[in-house]
Image (cartoon, rainbow, N blue to C red; front, side, top):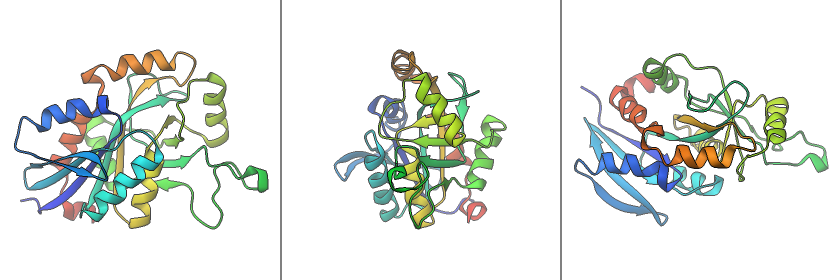
Length: 234
């Protein structure tokens, strides 16, 4: 039997959260707030799940992650849509293994792009969680997600992110969640679906994908939660 533990799920956009909320509300749940953001608490097997619709952007995501950890979550998961860079094409599922903040910039005083003085600035997801996800979705590339507080919709910028950082996807939350979880020593994993190619067609493609319930990988998150045994992660 699985141990009783708690998993936090962070979802940024209200449209990304909607199909997950619909699934949750078919079963017993409790509704609440975490720093003013909607939360839904429910159970899968013996696992308590606390899902939060955190809002878009790094600050919202980091605050949600810290709040979930403070609420006793042993594991943090994230799902949502990302811009695809390089070979990651629209519609594909990606499981980033490393994360950085591409808009952190101290190059004017001599640091490398995204480098943070005297601290680690490339964060990681949990290898054991990633292996469980791969047992569901298949083998994933060793990918790097870059996060920034703006929507990437330029082929020139997308090329810069690939060339400068080796990025394979871009979004507005994952690195902030990964940083918070790494700092607190809490396992984290992200499951993202590519909505656009982070180029001049990105806005229309993102909006189209965001309106499609089946585009959201929340089903993978639910299957993952069912597979997790806490003794296999810690």
